[in-house]
Length: 100
Image (cartoon, rainbow, N blue to C red; front, side):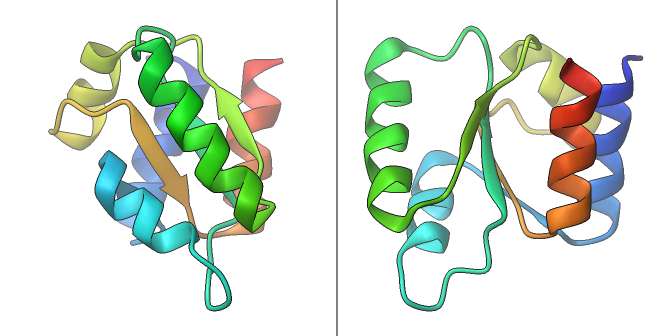
């Protein structure tokens, strides 16, 4: 398992992960957003990526594309989803740092 997936699993166990398009869009809405950053999978549709970037842009929340796929995420969190929001700055930086 990659370091990225391990860190995402840690976020889930710590209760610092929101997943699913609608839940993430709701979570990033200002003014009470606690989202540090949003992650999207590599095989997510371009339309969905564009929509999530638009919503996050309005809220000034960074979006990072993961090299992992929907199926990789399912192995870690148990749900096949391509949109994840991390609610902790340190964990988000750790996920992004593990990609590079």
